[in-house]
Image (tube, rainbow, N blue to C red; front, side, top):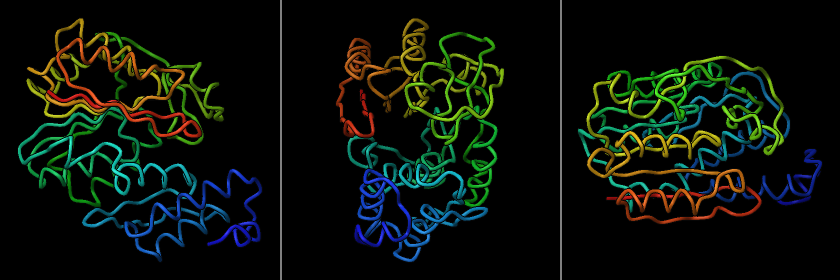
Length: 285
């Protein structure tokens, strides 16, 4: 769809038109054309309920209210493969994965399918609104025996009560109040919830070794990793591979990379562009 067509459909800002064009272009060859058109129409004109999106053997219900952010999240995980699953990051049957910031379950499902439904994915998601959709997507992909959902937040404490700031869109829900201001999101509600360290999470789930830790926890990545290092669990002997998504300037990707290197990981860093203020740091043993 060209720029004129987007204007006719009501995309008000030039930057919105550019983003929509990027979403459509990045979907081609990955998401069926019919579904792309449905996503585009729902993003521009709105819709009620959810859209069903199929990506290979995975199927997702995507809330209309969470477009276009949920669409972009799907693209980054599946179509663009920012996490480099299958290349730099390797998963095999029988592996254990911790998905910190599971959101609607996109990466949880991808990891479970990469392990051929044989293994364990601990999906950590403290936002109750997102968690309802997460449960549904796990059921839809018949992953109840592979995935466990943990409703707590990962944090820089063994166990504590923290505030969680539920935003619209849900993708930027955070435990960091300054992060809400930085991202310019609407604050929907504030909840008090349990927060735990990575060490306690692993102990509570009787996990002694993790093949992949993925963190996309909206500004809390540094405190979780620093506390894990102090606890002795941020090490290749306990966590084989790590994916960390951060949003500069709130979190410094170079600092995350340095911390992982200090703990014995080989690292790579990828900036996703100033417009999206995102970076991916990957550490492998």
